[in-house]
Length: 376
Ligand code: IPM
Ligand code: MN
View 1 (cartoon, rainbow, N blue to C red):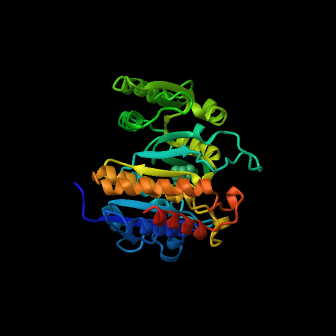
View 2 (cartoon, rainbow, N blue to C red; view 1 turned 90 degrees about the vertical axis):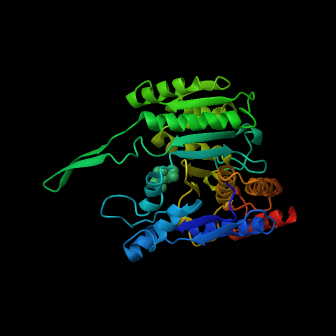
View 3 (tube, rainbow, N blue to C red; view 1 turned 30 degrees about the vertical axis):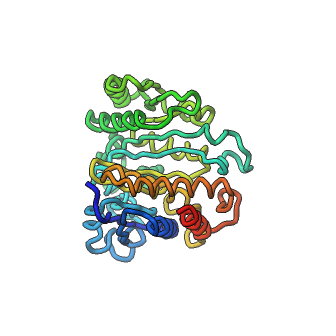
């Protein structure tokens, strides 16, 4: 199963995407200097700004290269003022297009507060939670729900009168995300910070929505295959307050697409902000990893955004590749990256503006690359 070289495609995309992907490349090069596994990195141009110049979202042959890759690392897409005539966001093909096209049905988003990082509630940098109290992983369904391409509008005489988005929950879609979350909870070294219990929380709105009742019924049925796990339930509105008040209760969380989109941005606040929030879009054969923050036009070109979300996305990519191809070298690289990141964060030597520091994006990348070399 192990390969002599893994084909990793970088998709920098728009805005701050290229700035953070450059730092990911830097840390990957540092890891490669003393790794037993070989990565072959290449870049595919694309995104909203590319679309503006070329009328297509991928460079020629780019989509095929992405589809053939062993893993994909995405920066960010989207740029104000660039629209597609079909109403989709410009950059659609790189994010939603690949999620559907490669069937990346699990959007896996860890929410962990590292020692040395402060949460983002209010404007003061005060610690509220012990870092160890925030350590959950949110599984967001990624190929259906409100994102299903079942949209439409009624236009009469050039006037839009009705716009429609249909929320689709399928048995296949619900089953596979729930099973994936439970398999992950079973393998996780620890349970919830509060009590160590291997708890899987189903976040839905089953007091109102039929699709959510179906999702919860499916959750209860699949849970029978995992007697060692504790099942737990939260309506999405209540989860919004509990995740902030008592994050230590949560271990693994599973939810539908749109709710997952919203609650992962909310939860990022307790892990230090969007500068730390990373996600893996994972299917059975393909996977794409990304920082969740987006292209952040306001910060683009200033070399100031926090690259740690991209380092976490990179770590997740190495871990996924290592597991998929049974390659212990890649798993070791993932652990080395995690240790370097944890050491740097606790040292406070790479604090970007969002954490009250003055270190630049590339400066933070230099510090992490240095820490990797130091511990090689
Ligand atoms: C995310 C983003 C995307 C989403 C956008 C860019 C389409 O917000 O990855 O969370 O809505 O899923
Ligand atoms: Mn989002």
